[in-house]
Length: 83
Image (tube, rainbow, N blue to C red; front, side, top):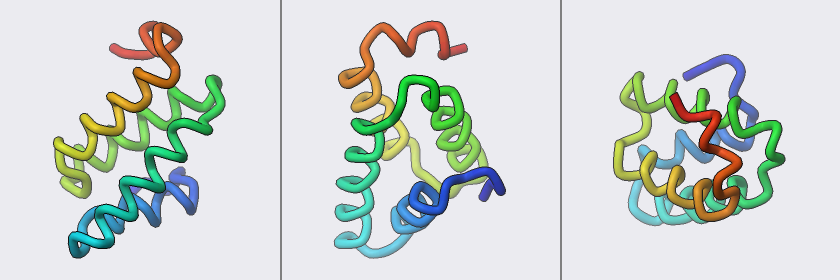
């Protein structure tokens, strides 16, 4: 996993690879993290989640769910940040 991941984000992303209860708790924490995310931190968050997806750590299902929450919470502000 990337060296630049925040400790909270890294821990919760790692928990997605564990048992069902850990995944459920991690997704709840990650969704809360996304809701509280400062607008200026969105590019770094997107890069971090994309990086973990590329290394196979986070499944596409979880990534899409996080992106959906990000889109709902931050709306059109994220459009310029998506390549």
